[in-house]
Length: 342
Image 1 (tube, rainbow, N blue to C red):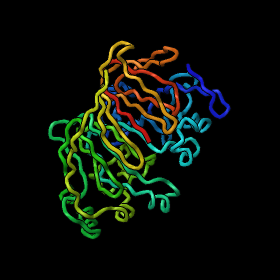
Image 2: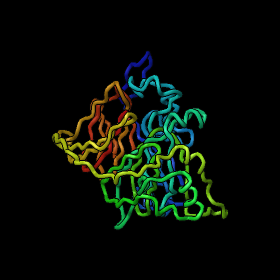
Image 3: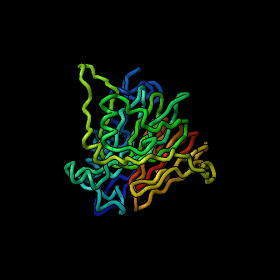
Image 4: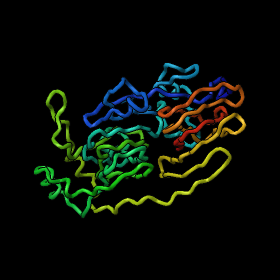
């Protein structure tokens, strides 16, 4: 492995393969275990936290000399891996983003997230949650909730929650594979049954549930709702139906790159790699400004360190943390990768 002298330390700078944290909520499905090999066979998994330094679920490194340690503990020791752009914002090894894969076997709860200003004041200094969804697959007829269909107000919403009629006020949006949705704070939303997607978000676990369809857990208890806080952060104006923007592919030998989303918290691109041997593989040269997260969403191939020639398989569902100013590497094979920067 390549080592570099960073702030007086010899620090391993190769990409780090991660083991996710699995969350089994009531609405989860079985595709994450059946198709991506996560957890046990046929296990119901709602969320797979692929790259996380959040205290509610920290990713474990599974490659290199840091194998077996949490990503957060390594970044706390080596903050230079995060990069110069986020150096002042990332304390105690926490990244500014969290990357998940979600499998909705049933409708997820109707919910909303606060923004940073509200969360910092009302949630003990936590961040709010801005997020983006990239749809990996969707069953025929699948829909998600995105905002209100018509302008609402707090009193009418409370009444509809009490009598169970809230769904008629929500905007349902048809979903298909490769769709992209940006979910700002205050937007009421829900992932519908039959949707498999990647969620890229601020490093936060704040969700205010408005409505959970009366479901109960294995102990016969309904999940906690957060109606009063939700009412304080909701955007009550109707939302325009989100439209898929025209996306442009940029080509280089062995790879086509497509821009998906950019906001103040993250930037996401999709890379379609079709490259076989080392000569035609795609070169990645990390910069000093930001770490990167690479999530393989389909296909398989290899990741090879340019200087040492060390090669590792990369398959659908694998997530790799790339340190800032790290070792150059190449990726080859037939695969699709989401590349996340901050």
